[in-house]
Amino acid sequence: MADTAPDRIDLMSDASLAEWAKKLDVTESQLKDAVSQVGDRATDVEMHLKGTRSTTNDDRIEAAGAGGAGEPRR
Image (cartoon, rainbow, N blue to C red; front, side, top):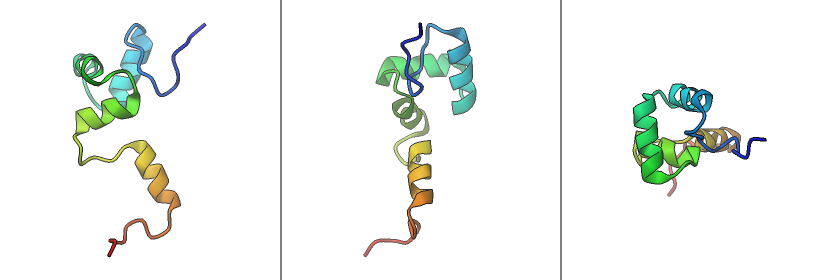
C-alpha cells in the first residue's frame, strides 16, 4: 500500500523519481538535492528549483479560472 500523496515526491521509488524529474525538467540528482532542502511537497520543490519568481501549476490553474487575472492591480 502506497502512502505517498500525489503531490509528494517519493525518492524511494525509482518510478516516482524518474516521473517527477521529467515533469520538473531536472536531473534525478537535482531533484534529490531539492527534496533534501525543502521537503517532498511537489509545489515546494518546483518553487525551489525554478526560483521565487516562477509560477507553479497550481498558480496557473487558479489564474486560468480567474477572469482578468492578467490585469495589474491599482
